[in-house]
Image (cartoon, rainbow, N blue to C red; front, side, top):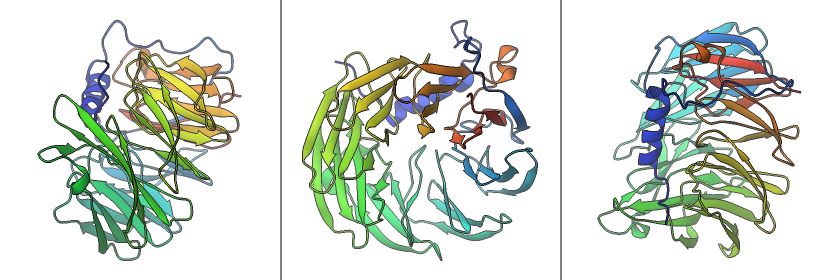
Length: 385
């Protein structure tokens, strides 16, 4: 049986995407579709060639873009590409896949460090170094109205106050990790009301993995329920009363209030890693072993469609205005949300002559623009109509 994808595998895949750029079987440059996306502007990364540089999803708010191309936080005018301000982050490598923009602040989690910046001018508000804690590569913060939550290697979730950065709660997870094994799953999720915390959890012994989905009260840390999975669980998404997660070759839906299984769908010849996206009545999920994008019925788990993606999909998926947007580590893909029909895909313009130029981060999407941090530039493209 196919092995599940672990975060170690993801690191290897990322290195391949960043370093193996001269292979003859690299993905094609673009689709023949007339509904093309065009580059509006691009800004070179100051620290060109940083490992995992450009891995963090930008955020669009109004006419501004916030991006982390390497070890700096940028604020950019969305329509013109003018750099409004830039501030350095005192780390050698930013490893988070996403960050948080909340009211007047930007929050970034990286390793044992959590930062808060003023979104108007980039001034640092606070920095917290959390003792006895390290996040895993590609982890990211989640938030409710008053707190930030972060999962880490030490089999725990920490909670920090937004106003001060003070750690005021640690939720221990060790009892659900078999003795001697390392926890490898950390992409936690909060309910929309901020009351319930969901923790995908896994353990790996070098040969096999096991997983859990845990639920806690986000205010008190009180344990609510546990669902045991046969593979490591790295991520989940929720909508209304349903929680959906990938594990190995399975997509599973639970009642998020009770942890009871609603459905489970086996997908042959593929496996999943990264974050599912629920939108409307569909669940979108990228395949890793066979690069593809899938859509499943939220109520039944029935596979609705699958579309080839040219390479493994280990990204955060965006859905907007009837379109699905994602990257495969080289290209941006845009599909019809209801049918999976490919609208457009393409690599950066520079890719034709130099394959070290790739679209690497998850994309941010507005009605008119797509923004993506690449390996060597931050790009803004038009949305193909």
